[in-house]
Length: 470
Image 1: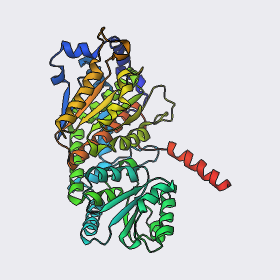
Image 2: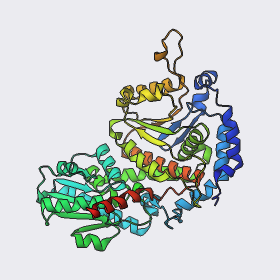
Image 3: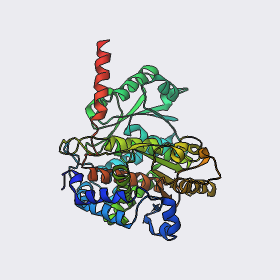
Image 4: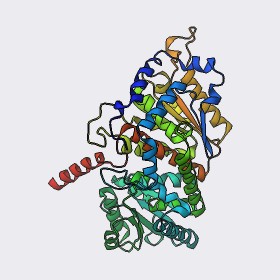
């Protein structure tokens, strides 16, 4: 598989030259000159479609981006990821999160663990011994299950989340809690995560040693010593930010129920099949990745906005911040060479329509063009109309000379729209898998390892040193 710098690829050099032809282009003119553009610049996957006519690309751009993917060995890397080969090069292990949602094709240990998770969940929801579940985790052990619970929690169980060592979050999660009706779920692959164990020990102090504890971890011995009654396994081939499909998502499962969780897994499996089979030009996550590479490396974008038009997805931008920036926020390649090109842009976002009264001002009239993903969830006509209006305004702008300068919009601000058939658990599974595969594909193009996170460790080590000196 190709681990040379992408700048050595013939397609990269062609794209650099091709980008010059886009310097003076205007999206408004492209859209007006080609009425068929909106129909032609569309690709579909199960339950969704990617509309990218408002991106600053043409037919030649797409051809060169597909050529770049081929030169980077995309097909070989994709096959290696899906086969569970060790694509995580610095830690010498697979990144096999797709196995967690593979259904009957999943490894037996995955199927057995899923059955146990579903059985425990059904018992907790039916027996009513516990009224509240408090999930202690951070990073992927928090953001994933928190998103599931917020999006589709049905109120059968009260599920709360604690990720911060600021005592206020724990105090609020435990407010009014009774030890005998509160279940604590401690999620840490190593069972050494500072923040998580700090909060777990604090819970014991506040609720007593007899507090019911479940653990999700790869360190079974440490969890038993801590007093966990049930232990659900994690595997070293699952990274935290890719772990919502595993036992790390247990609290989210309890909030939404077994049927909804299985639909989320099925939705991800839909996208896995699409990603595995579709050629690059028709492959939604791969095309999203290539459009991002085009914007970052050839048009100079340094940020990217994600704007879901559904309240149920209000936590999606925070989830994607970790998924994208912890994965691809790297400055050395797989061979340890310092990079001479940009990688992951700064990702931010919030739900529409509130974001329209906030940072979208910068997207419309700021001094930098920020590409955006509008996620139209088909929740209501009003939300869909607002999503389209914002995308059109960014693309077209307005240069009406009758308007004073402060009311003019430059336009030519690129965006894509991900249009869902409906918003349900299966759609959420599809959406999360879509972005996972986008992240992986960009890592292939940039020749970086998307599955380690050494940048997270330095600050933790320094914090321990500071505390030890006190």
